[in-house]
Image (tube, rainbow, N blue to C red; front, side, top):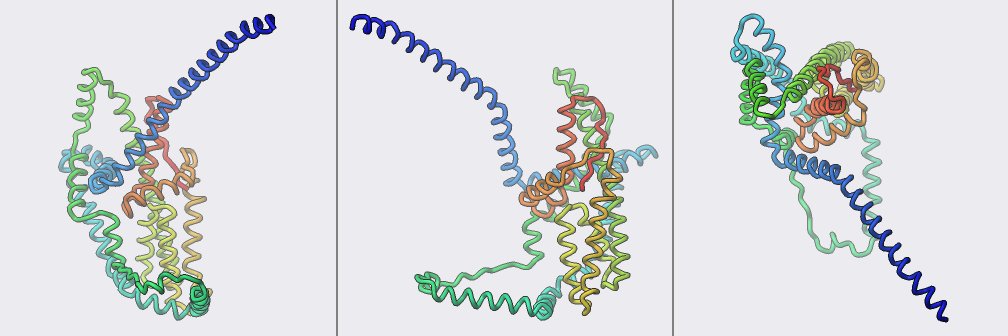
Length: 384
């Protein structure tokens, strides 16, 4: 008994000491794990705060993003005019005026046929219902069956309460402009800010960076990053514009050969909507299919225009663009799709057009930060 008690008395403190050491070791491991995950948590919270701010302050940030985008695209033209001896401010004003005239001319030329088709939407709906009578009959039969099941279901609260819910929907154009948050005043803000960014003297900008560097803040790497973003985005947009312009010309020619009405309209829309991957071609092929269904009687002629445009977009997306931009960084299609989904949800139609440029800029910044190189990062980002 005494030996047993002595044995147990001598072993208990050792067990307690081992347990205390094990507890302290586990606590140390937890603290180390928390310190390891703390930077990632801070990054996630910062990104969530940034997206929250961009979403609720879209009226402020959307004109700024568009102005920066326009200034990056048009800066090479201002530089070309500067080589001819034209001051940057005058060159920026001339380039913006030419842009406004080109956009106004194109919109005026395409607005008339586009407005006619929009005004014919009720007639289009009626004719589609007439032509697709079999589908409508199947839907009506399904609705009748659902109504019968609803009558048999006990406790139909909607019928008992006798309440009707009225849904008021605005016109298509009203919903479009309300979702984009793009007013005339915001357009003026975009043009004014783009002018100031284009009119800024590059030498003076570099002098400002150098002066800040003397104050103890080294911004030389940041200046190189801005140059890399500008170079990559400009090259990407220049090549993409050429590709989508050819796509628009081919679309117009094919629509004319297939005797589609307003072939120039479809070519112009193919060029513009090409800058919005996935979403733009889906919208256009739907519109072409609807107009083709209203225009022709034979099924092979009805299916010809949408299938032809679909074939052109497939060739462009999977063969032409990867071939031209094959030596550069290729964006995964899932990244493009997620970027389109995110920015379209946040900013509407303008977000759909800014989604790919924002993704390109993000990839350029990521590559520069990962490589820590002073190169220009002049690769072009290919979007399939």
